[in-house]
Image (tube, rainbow, N blue to C red):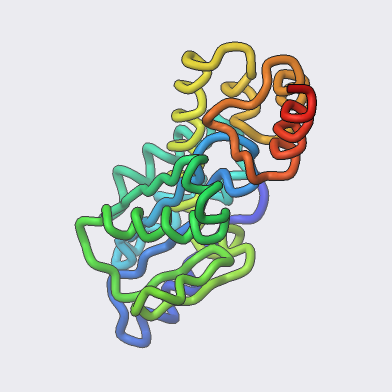
Length: 215
């Protein structure tokens, strides 16, 4: 199943006096369609069996869909608190993907019922948020709180994209979840982009320009 993330980052912060540490990660940043989704998770770091309870948890990209669903249920049952944020394609086009990702993270934090006193974030800092924080490159591989957030974000987004396929048949969204696969590219060339596609992303923008040139 790949590298198991641990609690080294969290334990170091606990030793410094922090108690409610939120892990944050996103899903869908590189997709051509659909929202970018972020999740924030506060784990019960006082539990001596926490790593055993969450032993299956990994970076969401290292797990099968079935494994992610099982881990999702584990995390939701175990967490002290969790929140999810979602920014749609139209806002991604308006803001840009990095600001939209930060907005989704802010929404996820706002959805928490507990107020964290430190943030551990996968790769992307939140400089406008006046909370102590650390951006950890590939944090979902090494930090259990971030790995848990990666699973909540990924599963939430996958469910959203599967539901969207019912409204947009023919694009294969339930299979590729909006990412730039060969199947998705072929469907776009046949059916054209939709309002759920990211029109500022180069492959969609090119199709729009070709369509405008033909009209």
